Amino acid sequence: MRQAQDISSEQSGREVRLVRATRSVCQSCHREVPARVVVKQDKVLLEKMCPDHGDCTILLSNDPEYFCDLTDAYFTLVPENLPLKILEIALTSRCSFSCPICSSTSIRSAINDLTVEEVTKIVRENRSKEIMLWGLEATEHPDLEAIIKAMRKLGKNPYLFTNGFKLADYEYIEKLYKAGLSHVHMQFDGFEEKIYRALRGRELLESKLRAFDNLKRLGIATCLNVTLAKGINEHQIGPLLSYCVQNDFIKQIGFLPLIKVGDAEKYSPGMVPHLHESLSIIERETKGRIKVDSLRIFQKFMYVVYRFTKFRRCFWFTLYVLIKNKKSADYTTLDEIIDFKRLDTVVAEYINGCKKKHGVFNDFRLLAKLIPLFLRRKVLPLIIGFLAFIVTGNKIRHLRFGGDLLWLTCVDFCDPYKMDLDMAEKYCEEILAMKKGCDVVYGRTYDEALGICVSPRDNSST
Image 1 (cartoon, rainbow, N blue to C red):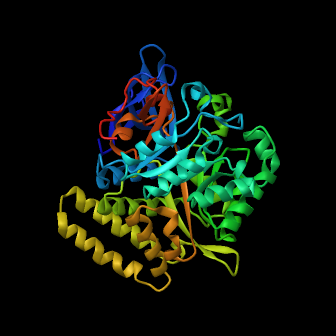
Image 2 (spheres, rainbow, N blue to C red):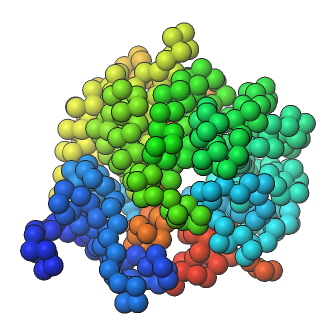
Image 3 (tube, rainbow, N blue to C red):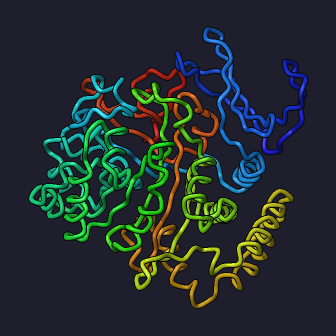
C-alpha cells in the first residue's frame, strides 16, 4: 500500500504505477466503489468504477514526484486512527446568500436549527475536540450569542465560520465578542467586486471591509478563508498576503480550492484547481517566494511533528508559516531563515529509519540533527509560536507567543469525485454534527451524516 508499484494497463497498454488501492464513492449515486490511486502519463489519477454509472477518472495532481514523495512520507510517519480532534457543528440551514458556488444547496431542507441546549450537550460530550461553528451561515442562527456564552462556560473557545455579512454591524459583533467570541474564520475572496459577483452572486466588498474594521477594533483573531477559482481571483493572492502582513488581527490565511459540489458542479473543470495546482498558483503569484518545493519539504517535516505529538491531520492539509515584517510591510519565508535542503535530507533519513524500524535510536538521531537547524536567534520566536500551535491545539489564539507569524494553509476537500474512504476513515481530523428531524447526527460529510453515503462512520465514540 505504501510503496508505488508498476502494473500493466490492459486498456492502454501503457505502464501504470499503482500508488495505493482504496475505496471511493460514485459521484452520481454515492455508493461505495473500489478505487485506486495511480500514476499514468505523468499525472496522479483516482480511478473508480460504479456498476451502474461506469468508470470514472479524477485528476489528483499533475506532479507525481511531489504527490508520491508526500504520500510515502505521510503513510510512513502519521499514525492511523488517532482520536478525532475537530467537531464542526452545523447550527442552522439558514443563509443570507445564494452563492453560485454553494456546495450545500442539496441539503438545506434536511438540516434543522440546533437549540442552545442541544449544542451544549454536543459540546459536553466532545470536550477533547476543538469546536467549529458553521451554518450553513452560523450568524443566521437566532441564538448564536447564547450558544457562544454556553460554550465559554464549558471552557470552550468556539471558532466561528462566517461569510462576514452580519459582522459589518458593529453592535452585532460586539454582542458576540462580549459573549466570548475570540476567533473568526471569514470568507474573503479578494478586493474586487467582480470576484464577488462571479462567486457570490452579489457585490460584497464594502460590507466585508467594514467587518474587517470591526474585527480589528475588537481585536478578534481572524483567519481569511479564500475560495480559489482559476480565472477569477488567482491574481489576488499577492494583495491578500500584503493585507494580512499589515494587519495584526489577521493570524491566518487559508486557500480553499473551488470544489464541484452542489451548485458549483455546473462550473467548468478548468476553474477548479486540484491541490498541487493551487500551490503552484501561490508560487506563481508570489513570484517564486513561496515555493512548491519548500511547501513539500515543510509538509514532510510536519508529518514528523504529527508523529511525535500524535496530532491528527488530513493528508490534504498543507501548512506553511510566514514571518511578518511590519516595518517593510512584507514577510519572510521559512526557507530564508532555515536550511530547507538540509531539512529535507534529515527528514528523508528519518523516514528511511522508520521503515527499517530503528525505533528510539532513530528518534534521538533526528532530534540531534534538527537542533542545529532550529537553534538560531531568528528562528527561536518561530519555534515558540509553533510549539504553542501544535502542543496546545488552540491554534491562532496563542500566536502572540510566536511574534509576528502568519499561518498559511491550503486545504482540499474529499468531495464525491475525489473521496478516498480509506484515508477518510483512518486520518480525517473532522466530524460533522447537525440536526436531522429531531435527532443529532454525525458524519465525515453532510451526505454521510444524512445517510446518503452508503458507508457511514461508526459514531459510537463521538
